[in-house]
Image 1 (cartoon, rainbow, N blue to C red):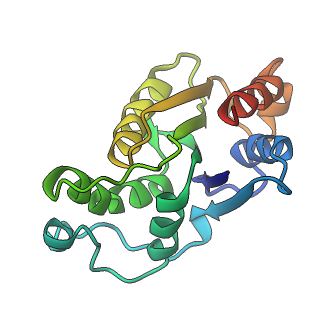
Image 2 (cartoon, rainbow, N blue to C red):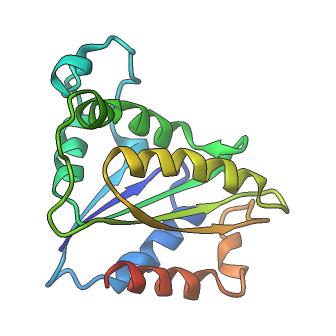
Length: 188
């Protein structure tokens, strides 16, 4: 099984990275092919809304997004993790998602089938500093649109509130276990 993982956090060693490290430990890399993208370290231009992908389904911008496109096409499972910033996904995550407009055009304008033969599943992991889940719910709407555009019909969301400072997630009573359990379900 091919698993693509997106780390959308700009904070090295932060809560998202800690959760993703636990998630990846669950995946047997002898059986599964895992590709991890640390979006903060990548050179990806924002979507220019130029319409180039309307005709071909392929983005006209040539940058590190090409590797992401290829990985998404091959992926059976996709994990995307980002902190909540101002009730949305991080800028790093949003740039990547916006550039997936090419998939949207391919699927909805050009009517091409971009589904994976084995069926796809996704996992969205997020943390937010607020005490309520408003930011998590808002972020999930963006993730739903992303997964729908890349033909991921099912995904699970793991959202943790009141996680502000670096390392706070380690004090959460169930976050690590919840993440491990979610990844185990994803691999089924």
